Amino acid sequence: MKGDSRFKSEFSCMDSYEAEKLSSIFSLQKDNTLFVTEIVKTIGPEVVVRLKDGSHHSILLKDEKNAFQLSVFFQKLVESRGIVSDTNYNENRAVIYWEG
Image 1 (cartoon, rainbow, N blue to C red):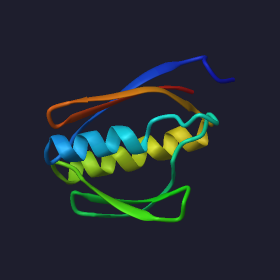
Image 2: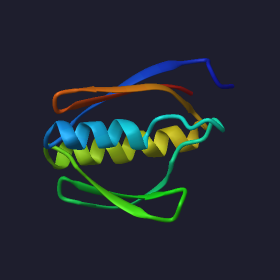
Image 3: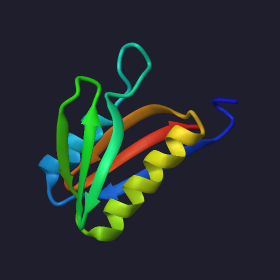
Image 4: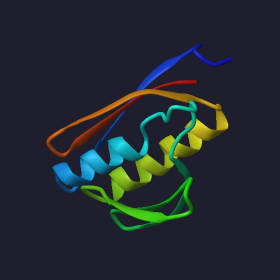
């Protein structure tokens, strides 16, 4: 059941531009869905995502560990049918708050 647990996931990105992009891509849309539909692949510190409009975008994380953590986060979010409640960023850190 949604709302049973609240989580905070943090990711270190290459720079503030990448952190802003990550928080924007994972923000909840007006129809209560995510703009990102899947993580297509992870190549080192780079994560390639597919968006609802069919386009693909790259997010550069600080390192491979953060890229892996983003993939694990997305998998948990999808499997739990979780909902992102808020996103923000500060410098190179992106924070995603979600309920699952």
